[in-house]
Structures are given as structure tokens and as C-alpha cells.
View 1 (cartoon, protein in one colour):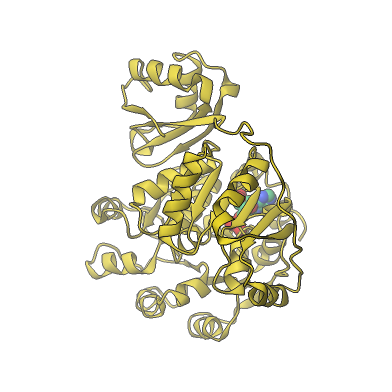
View 2 (view 1 turned 90 degrees about the vertical axis):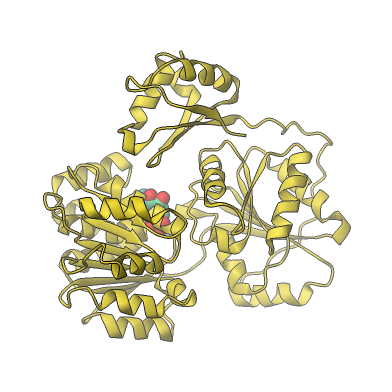
Length: 455
Ligand code: AMP
């Protein structure tokens, strides 16, 4: 199989793939689609960024009957952020299946709206095990209509201690379901999980060779760490970067210092309110913040298209974490850059990482940048609008209001993201103020919504 057209997919799905720009299947899709479409179980080794989500979302969508309001497919993921990504991909690929309802069920959000949506009936649930179990135990949903079950990032779910929860959830699904298991590694525990819950699974793997990532490192004295980071970011100021720190407190300090130095940076760590984390990610994805300072846990599984660089503000605790961090860049064949700042005493740990990855990390002298390089203003700003999917708002409505009532040109409008109750739109910074005023005065879909400029 070399082409999506060879798979006998429904026309609606083929159109979506073409419109989405998925011209041909990625290697993991080439290997996974035929067995999954034939109804077989599958255990697949693949990284985030390989196209694994569509590899299970496409077959799942061919098996869902959107005409029936019954839960038919269940995807279990380790984190809330991954749930959001997976549900987004399923909704995107399923957009021509009328009445298809995809629900995210995970912690960090009030359970009541989830319970209400479950009551109304959905066909697909994307969930973290803990919260799903909560709903199950309260009798808010039944799994006996589940025909497709996906365990995504199974290795991470096991690492996070979800083994018991998974067992209790799977015990309530029908034995004749199809089960697909995706994992970055095939260790003992993952194989045990597969042996327990899958029937004669087809086993596929794509080479885990790191994508095109240029790596280099820079030795810094402790006192110069922050100023080195600032010059590094200034040198590549037009592009996006995630800066990894080992602790939340360091994230807070670094983000604050970057802002003081005129580099707009946001924070991402587990100590923040979910709302702050969502906003930080939205602004980073749409380009209105260029620098995201993050801890490892918070950035787990993130797929950020076009991420130019990863910076290790300090060496991570282990080579595995290093590989995981730098894997955020260089996605989908694009060239990425990973720069590591380290202290004079870190030679041993660098060697350990080099041995683990089999690739030397060359030393590079810090670049000298002119003082005050003009980086202070981000090119984009984000407006939040107090209405979303629940208010039947679509990207076209927002684009229409901006180019109509607010008088903007389409090219001044960037990415538009619609969530359940809120929408976010990136705008050229020089017209954001005008758009704000006009949108506040005007209407979207005939209604007035609360509009704010995010800082
Ligand atoms: P994933 O591994 O599922 O996180 O996917 C990584 C990225 O690849 C996502 O941004 C997808 O939208 C994109 N993608 C998935 N399949 C294809 C394809 N066949 N062609 C181009 N891009 C794809």
C-alpha cells in the first residue's frame, strides 16, 4: 500500500485527507492501516510526530456509525494534552460524518459537562484512565458497544501507574472488540499488556531514528546561564523555541527574566492552572508567543507544528529525557535544532547522552549578538472570544466578522482555534487593538460576545 486511494476508504474520508494536505501515508500509516482496516488487532511502535494518530483515527472512523448515539470507540491516552490532540485529529478527519460526537473525558475539567454530554450520547470518547473510571463507577456510561479500543502511548500510561485502571476499564468492554496499542517502546510491561488484551496482534514498527535535528551544546558558567539563553534566543528570535528547565521554580524565574529582557515568553508547568496552560499553548501554537519555558512533564507528548528549536536550559536528569525533549523539534521531516546549555562539571553526563543516542553533540562557541537586537515586539497577538463550539461558532464566522465588521484583511488573521466555550484568534499585532474594539461593538453570528486581548 503506497497511497490512501488503495485502501478502499469512503469518499468522504478521502476528501478530508486531500483537503487536510495528507497527500500520502506516513510510514506508520502505511504499515498500520491495512491490518486495522481489516479488523485485526495491532501493536505498533512509533513516536509522536510519526502520524500515529491518523493511523488509528482513520480505521476508527470507518467503523463508527454516526447515525447511532452509542459509544462505539474508546481511545485511552496518558495525559489531558494528548487527549486534546487526539480528539482534535479525530474531529478533523471525521468532519464529513454528520452527527459525529467526539468527547474528551479527563481530569482538570469539571466532570458535570462531561457527564451531561455522555448522557446525550457520543460515539467516540478520548479519555485518561482515571477520569473515565470515575464516570464508569458512577454508571454514567456503558462500554458494551465499544468495537474499537485504542491504547495510545501505552508505555507512558504504564509509567504513570495506570495499569490497574486500564484493567478495570477493559474488563467492561466486549471481548470481541478490536484493540490497537501504540507505544514508543516495546518493553516487558507493554508486551504483557498486549498479551493480556489483544488477539493475535499484527506487530509493526517504524525505525526510531531521530529525525533531522541539528544538536549542539554550549558551556556556560552558572552566573552566565541566563544571559547566554537570552543571546541564544535573540540570535534566532524570528523562530519558535521551547526552553526546558528541570524544575517549576526555574521555569518561573527564567520566563520572568526573559520577559524583563524584552523576549515575550510564557510558562508551562504542572503547578499552573489548567486554564493558564491551555492559554500558553494556544498562544504558542498560533505564533503570538515565540518562547515557551516548560518542564518535562508539562511538555510530554506535545506536537507543535513548525517548532524551530529546543533549548535545554540545563542538562536533563537522564539521556531518555534528553531524547524526549529534543524530539519536540524536527517533526515531519523538517529540520530542527536542539541547543544544550551545561556547566563545566557536566562532561560525564554529556558523554552518557552521546553514547545513548550514538551521536556526538558538538561544542559551539556562543554567538555574539549585538546588544538590543530588535526582538521586543511579537508579530502576532491573540484575541479570546467568549463563545465556542457550544455556541456553534466556526472559524469562518470569526474570519467573517474580522474581515467584515472589523475591516481587517484576511492575511492579517492567523490561526483560529475553537474550543467548547472559547475561541482564540491570532492577529497581526498592529491591527489587534482595532479588531478588539470593533469586535466588542459588533456581533458574531448575530450575537455579542465578550472579547479580550491576551497578554
Ligand atoms: P502524530 O504522530 O499523530 O502526532 O502526527 C504528527 C503530525 O503529522 C500531525 O500534525 C499530523 O497532522 C501530521 N500528519 C499525520 N499524517 C500525515 C500525512 N499522511 N501527511 C502529512 N502530515 C500528516
